[in-house]
Length: 321
Length: 153
Image (cartoon, rainbow over all chains, first blue to last red; front, side):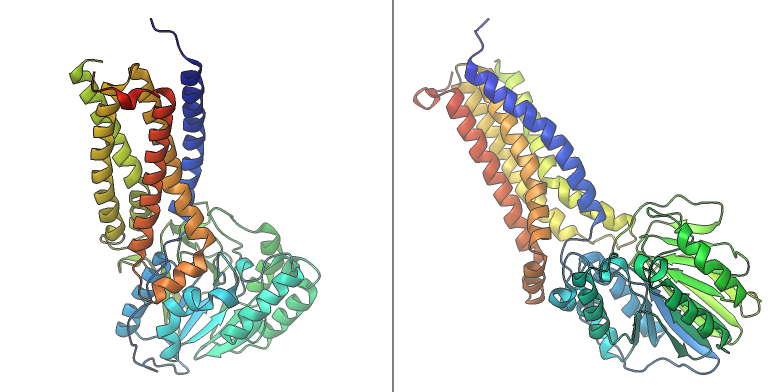
């Protein structure tokens, strides 16, 4: 048997060590590649008919979408399906549930993370209203993240971190569900505003849009602290529907004290979901939600980029009361 | 090493080499497919990777056979091959992530200007292949300094 040389030992040792490193590193890297939407997406080349929707005191069609801020191919696929849906069923509002910019500053990336997928809707006059997400400004309210939030609000024309807007038969209550604003020093002011806004609302439908879900079977899961604060308010004031993002899947709860909770965070990437006892339906998928209100009837559909309907449900305006 | 086992082993190595190159594009396509994107999504990246994988697998096979024949100790050829494969596996995905994540703005601008993203993809994969080939060549020459002056065994 030939004698093993020192060089063989060194080279073989490096190879074995490298194989161990490669195994661990590539496994983690593949998970990252699988989860994050990193391949840049092409701009959507479609011209939508402006003002094609019909909003009256009885009718409204809108989209709820969350966590779309990658600027990647999957975000563009979701937006492309939204554009195709608009051509069949025009909508005048996109209620965005936050995280419109990942991987960098929104001022630097606004064109690719927002205008590239959403530009067609902006040009068509669709209103895009935002509930601030943790990636839109950071959850710890540093000076840097404050500036980032303000930039986000300014670029989107969002009036404030929390606000109400009226569209047809529905009032939309956009909350800032970040920790400092809802669980910290800013909580009293926001919750006081929220109670007053709900109490003075005479809309047939009350819809809340926020980033962090209080009922979720996803990776981050339910925010129990936020649930403790917000759920009594929702129930007390007859909120019909609560949309949230943050977890990158689609989920609808069973009605809980008259309120239906929907997670629609599949705007560009997916994370796992493990249905809980409150779940009516859940799926880890890219999607957006199209909602049609016709008087006392609300029909909601979660739509995948390939056009498949993931989930469909109906609510009656009197169901929550 | 006898001729047939060497050819079979080198062929197996070449297949693993091809699979490593194809890996990232398949992972991306799987993620999109699971997310409900239409079937042709990511096909451009898979095709690009398949072409590079096929060409490099053939090169890797021929390199293996040549080095096995030229080496005083066949083990040296395999040590060099394993080192090359390790570098390929690391580079093909880590370089991709570094380039995509570290230069997201730059890529987005290029794509916005009409540059196909498959060009970026091919560039990253070719860089990984080059790193692997250089590693394999260096390690084999280090283990077998006189291999270049000998003909096939």
